[in-house]
Image 1 (cartoon, rainbow, N blue to C red):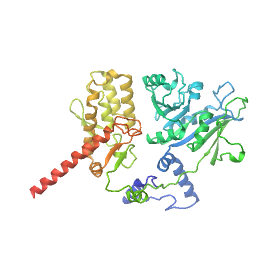
Image 2: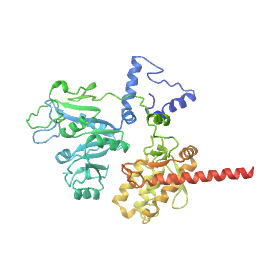
Image 3: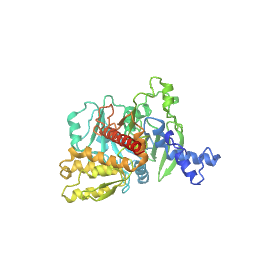
Image 4: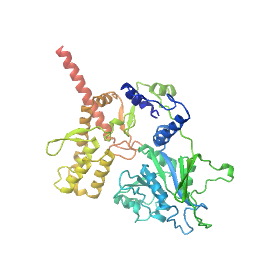
Length: 467
């Protein structure tokens, strides 16, 4: 299938065809019933990415297990276990394919979940707790960050003392003026999340469905009857009074998993594969107040964005000297930056942390290792880190943009534009959600750009003198 982002569409196809390889685009070069099924399979496996390209929210799946009479727990609240072990293993697979798992405060209080993938390594999704009042227990498995981090989302001003307590445990707290699923999903979309698995109770599930942020449902139905007038159901009040108002699932599938039946389907149609990303001319046609000669702002954040290569997380290896002056290859700028927190500390655990960061499989993994160690073992961090970290980042960025000509050209092409790292939660390196961040990464790139432009001008003058 073609790339859903217009500025990247066709590049890979052209590259492969230029090497003499046959590339068939499903639905274009090949058409038949079998090909249409293959095209749909490609679309389904890429759904999270397609949704990111076509909308402002991550692809969200609501998952629940219920008895044959529609209960997700007994009247007492006891719910372990409704579904079989085989079904629970399938849930672990769903978690492993998600960027984050969302639960509400009731689930934390009642079930004290861990929300781990439990598949013996690999990807671990972030845990997100939505709680308007922050009425949460001080002791909970989700506050244990030894395997993966937790983000608590709440209403602005809720239980300040408990927010400080969570922060002391390393739990990130994000506040909203008005807490609703749509705003929360747009926020995590801006943080780069592609797919979210909702494992919440009926009240939050109903709110998410009403907000239009749930795209697919996985319902595990166990052949059990529990009864109970007050036993909870998977979806709370939606305000519907007639069966004609019921929401119909699209492309429904049925799968027998052990004794359970898995029913899945879409609540919303799959978005258009080719969303339009307006060009500068198209933008000017839509809004004549946007003049091409005016100073523009270029935002960058995730590596798949148009200017994503500006990010310190982009997978461009660099060679930088270690503490002994020997040049070492680092997988990314972020690898080098995180390792430098511990360089020069005469402590074996500090060196061990450097080695682990260096061998991290991704920049995100390197960042997680560095941040967790910095928080849990601050004595391992070099004493001058706060005063040198900007210079460390600058040197790594300068190396990256010096050794990759296409990145250098991309940076120089932005002359006259303000560069803003659009991270909504990093208020030091990024611009913040509402522009309140310091945007040091953008500042360093503009400083680099100015230096490179100066060098280019000087080289041109010298060439003229030589002639």
